[in-house]
Structure formats: C-alpha cells, structure tokens
Image 1 (cartoon, one colour):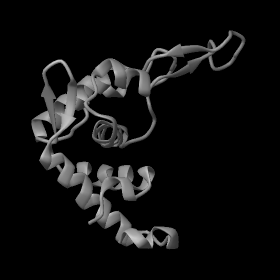
Image 2 (spheres, helix red, strand yellow):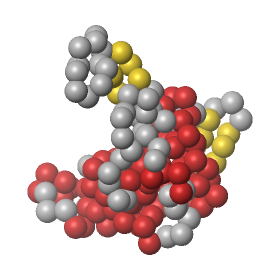
Image 3 (cartoon, one colour):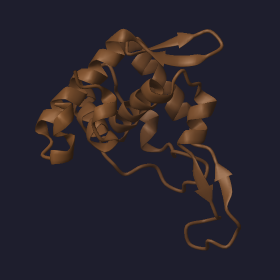
Length: 153
C-alpha cells in the first residue's frame, strides 16, 4: 500500500490542493486578499489557490512531524529577513510565518475532520486525514512517470 512517504512532497501537495478546491471544507477567508504570510513579507501571496495549497501543506506537515502546535508551524513556515526587498543590507534574522493563516487553516481542517486537537501536544492527523493522504499518494504514484518510484506502486 502506498503511503504519503512514498511520493514526492510537491506532487502530493499539488494533488491535495486540487482535492481541496473541489471540496467546500477548506475555503479562503475574505481577509486573505490583504494578509501577508509573515512579518518579513511586503505583499500578500499572488497565487490564486494559495489557501488550498497552504492547507494541503499543513496537513502533510502535521502528518509527517505531528503532533505540532501553531508556534512550531510558524517557525517551519518562516524565513530569514534582511530588511526590505530592495535594500538587503541588514544581517539575516529569523522571521516567523503568519500564525493567523496557520491557525485558521488548521481550524478548517479540524472542522473537515482531517486534524484533531490533543491536549498539550498540539494537533495531529485523524484516521480520515491519514486515509485522504494515503489515497491521494496512491493516485499521485500512478500518475507519476518516474522509474525510481515504481517499486512503491
């Protein structure tokens, strides 16, 4: 049986993004048009499917590294900043990702039944979320034309 560990992360996230676009469980709030993805950013994301892509990435991240809390995920989705985009003159400093985006997406995944909150541990993937990831990984593996991954099919 194919699991989420058997396929490349980019391909799995892309397939989950398409799945979330078809579902009504994960929808971008109105404020995402003006929200930045972190304090080091100057503009909001330009991808039209940003919210679904971030939710898919969060689901995979919690499944692989979970249980995880919002603070740990803010660190994972953060970058290093060096001042404005124009003048990169300061030494690099660590900047965290947007906690509001992560928290809201996780709450939507909870309402859909893919993620659950555990006491003092953070969030972890439910059985339904794990089966969604594994089923999607199986579909991705069938569609991939990479000979080095054929042994997992």
